[in-house]
Amino acid sequence: MNMLRRQSRTIGLLLIFSLMFLAGPVHNAQAAMIGAQTVIDTAKAEKAKTQINAFLAREDVQNTLTSMGISPDEAIKRAQSLSDSEAIAFADNMEKAPAGGSGLGVVVGAALFVFIVLLITDILGFTKVFSFTKSVR
Image (tube, rainbow, N blue to C red; front, side, top):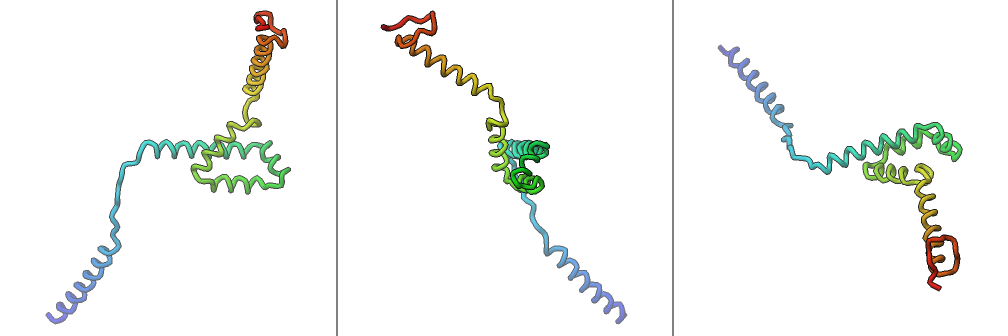
């Protein structure tokens, strides 16, 4: 009987300590709704990072980086460390840069500008380029 009391006391202490350790580090989980804008921004950032990585993987870009004294591996590491907003801004600038886009818009804009200038000078009577205009003079 004495032995049973000693064992029950030991077992009881072990149970008390084990329950204390199990109950101690409990963390409450919190769930919240995420907004649609957050999901869209995350998708934009992933698309931008994929676009940057594809750009840096091109052979001509790597040759240009090497000629400028920049290691392509270092450039890739730096691109991977960009924040989401920086990656989006960089990808947008890559698309809008003249070397990365087509020059058609510039040519059309210049031609339109020259046409308007010649049209105005024809109307004012300084030149006679177009036959469909009548001079003010």
